[in-house]
Structures are given as structure tokens and as C-alpha cells.
Image (tube, rainbow, N blue to C red; front, side, top):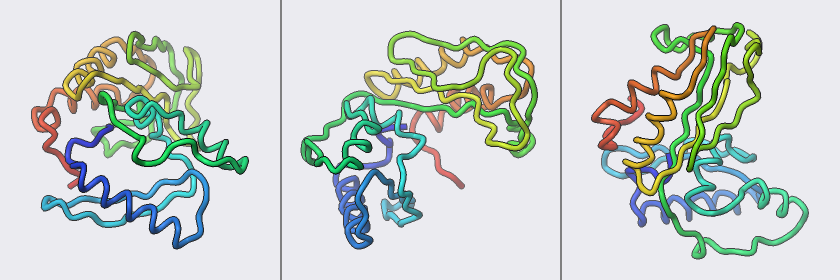
Length: 199
């Protein structure tokens, strides 16, 4: 989700400065991502850097108004960015759910197979990125991703409410998926309050 419910403006600036310093030290030019972990005391730790655009870029784009893929292509063509970090502001809140062909209650075991029916949600602030369709067969030898459901609202609670509606409208029959797992997550009070971690 973006923006993160635990990241304050000063912490965002510190992490951004660390990412820029890391990219400069490596002589890196282009789209890339530095990932950090944050502990309960607000300390952050470098986890990894990716020299590519992240698959989660659709959560950044709606809240910043930037089209990151376009910017990536422009920089790769040798053009300079037309904005600075100070020009970037946040508006609204975006959440992404990766709907995978997996069985959550079996440690997210892959569940390849044929999709008998697929009906995607829509509406204001809703985007679905997918290659799948009714009759499509999820193969056993590739990533189990079926679709990315990206929902934007005026604030975090609005985004959560819209996401819950979209999950109810998301019809996926024939194979197990993470769809119902997300429904449990979005009904969990700790998630709604932003009190969750990866432990």
C-alpha cells in the first residue's frame, strides 16, 4: 500500500536520502528500487536493491501522479527528469492485492489449473492488471500470479472499503486463489488500524 501507514515524512526523507546515496555510490542510472525494513522503534535497515521497476509500481503512480514506466523509458533514452524530489507530493491512498493461484491455508502452495470463470471488478479508482481470462490455464512451471487488483481511495479507510467491495465482486472459479485470504486480511482490525508486521 502507498503511502505506508508507518512511514513519517522525516523517516521517508531519511530512507530516500539513503537510497539516493546507495544508487550514486554504485554509479546507477535508471529506474530502480531500494527496499528497507523498519523495526517497531522506527529504525530502518537496508534489505535489497533492484535495478528495475517494481511490480508494485501501480501503488505509487496514483498517489504521486507520476507514470513511472514513462519516466523509466525517458531516462533510458538519456533524457533528464522534469521534476525533483521536492516536486513529488502524495494524494490519496492505494492498495494492491496480488491475486495468486495459491492455497493460503497450505502455506500458499501453488494451485495451477484451469480458470472456469473470471469476472473482474471495476469502477472509479479501480485498476486490474491481468493476462488471465475464463478458460485460461495457470501453468505449474511459472509464477502463480493471476491478477493485480489496485484500488485507490481518498484516504486509507476509503481504499480499504473499496478494496473489500472489489474482492466481493471479483469472480474467480475453478482454482484456489488468495482472494478470500485478502478478504480475511481486510476484515482484521489490526490491519485496518495499520498495526501489522511481517513476523
